Length: 403
Image 1 (cartoon, helix red, strand yellow):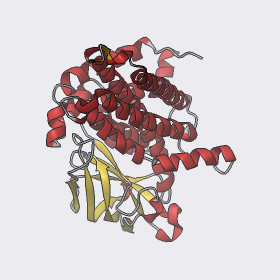
Image 2 (cartoon, helix red, strand yellow; image 1 turned 45 degrees about the vertical axis):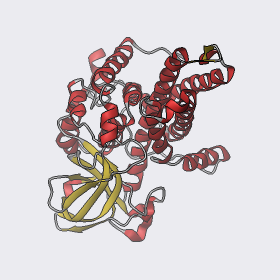
Image 3 (tube, one colour; image 1 turned 30 degrees about the horizontal axis):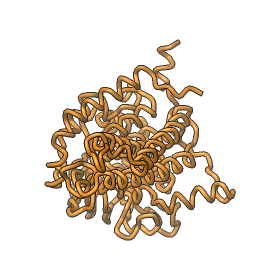
C-alpha cells in the first residue's frame, strides 16, 4: 500500500490552495452575506484545467486520476462549499456521467466543451416530492416522432441559473416504476425551459441553487442518455461520483475548521494560558485531526477503486456518510472553541457550521447511507455489474503513450 501523493498531486493541491487563498477567501464573507454566486470563479478554474481535471485528454480534460478530483474538491471546500459544489455537479454528476454513459457523438458535443470549461453542466434529479424516493418523481418525457416532450420540474438544483447543459431524469413509462425512468441531456436555450434561484438558505449562501421548469420542452431523441429505462441506473452511478466529491469536500470543511481553531487556540488566552492548553479544547482538536485523517483514507480508497475501474458504491457511500458527519462535528467544535466569537461572521467558523449541514442531507441522507451500509453487511444488498463503467486510470490514450 502506498499512501503518498504523487508529485503531480502535490503540485495540484498547492495550486488549488493558492487559488483559494487569493481568489475566494478574501471575498467569501461578502458573497455569503449577499447570497451572491461569483460565476467568474468557474472561468478561472477552467483556465487552470480544473473543470475537467479527471476527464481524458481526448475530450479536452486534464487526464488526471480520480483522486486528483478529490484533492481539488477538498481544497475548494476549504474556501467555501459553494465552489466545491459547483465542481461536484459539473464534473462529478454531469461530466463523469457523460464519460460513463454517453455515446461518442454526445461526448464530443457536450463533454468536450464542459471539460474545457467553455460550457457548464448540472444535474436534475430531485423534485419537490421526490428526494430519497426517486420513483416518486412526476417529470415525464413522452416520445413524439423525433423528439421527447419534457414536462415537469426539479428542485434544489445546483447551478440552476448558471449551467448550459443539464442531465434530467424523467419517466418515459411510469407503469414500470424505477425501470421506466430515462435520462436526457437538456440545453438551457431550448424553448420551454426556465429556472429560478432559491434564496434564504441556511448555508452555502454563496452558491446558486434553485428550481428547473420544463414546459413542453422538445428534446431531440439523440439526447437520450443510454437506453430508455436506464435512467435510474444512470442516476445511481452518477451519485457514486457525486458522493465521492461531497466526501472529499467534507475533508476540506474539517481542514478549514481545524486550521481556524488552531490559529485561535494560539491567539486566545484564558485563566493565564493559551486555550489550546486546556484539555477539553485539546479533545476537540484531536477529534478534528482524527476525523480528517479517517475521512481522507475513506475517500482515497474509493478513488483508488475508481482508478482500478472497479465498482465502488459501497465504499463511496461509507466515505460520504462518515466524512460529512465528521465535518459537521468539526465545524460545531470549531464554533465552540471560538466561544461567543464563533457565533459571529467576524470569524469563518459560523459559515463552516452552516455550510456543513447540507452535505449531511443531500446526495443520500445520513439515514440512507446508514441503511445502505447495514444492508451490505447483512447481505441484503449487492451491487450488480453495470452495462457501462467509468474508464480506469491511466486512460487509454495515456497507456498508448507509455508504450
